[in-house]
Image (cartoon, rainbow, N blue to C red; front, side, top):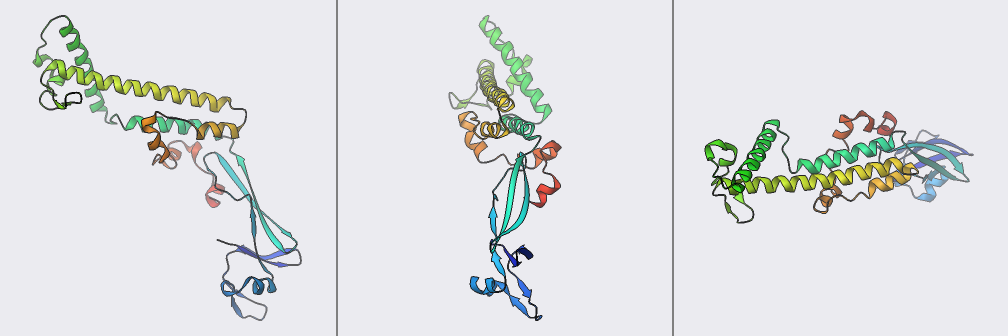
Length: 250
């Protein structure tokens, strides 16, 4: 929205602000929003030129201004931006948060269920070892895997698993897939953090941050924005929160 200021001589005596009813020297109320540019200029009101005003990420940058000045009959608001002292630390923190958000798509946050998965993997490894030795595992001794029989669908066959050996293979396949993804995330996460730390300038570090390539199947998820990336992450890590000045000048 356009902003205006009233100039007398080379001084701004009103504004900058948005056009609104204004009381002139006679005490009359003038609706500035209904006046033409020529009529506004006759009253000393001119559209403000805003310089340097742009979107910025308050996790990494700070905005200062506006600095007000008059150039001829033109009021000017000048803004400037600078990198926060903790910009790189915040970039690195967000990299970790994004990696964790991707992991959260695949794992549960419930510790009891996590323990259940770990026990199932352990039993699956034991069953595979027994089968390799020619032994026949007893379902009563492998209750976690037995729970999958007739219930869990084998993604390879599209049918429910029929015995402990098949249940073990399904569990171990899922475990391998998760660890392969987790390893890929770790590689991206560690390499990106290193490049951010070692960048010559904060601007260069931000270019690294903006161009991180996550595993392809999750890049769209990241591009759409992690729901808690801007807010909850700041609450979790106070260093990510904008200052009162930044909140006042978003």
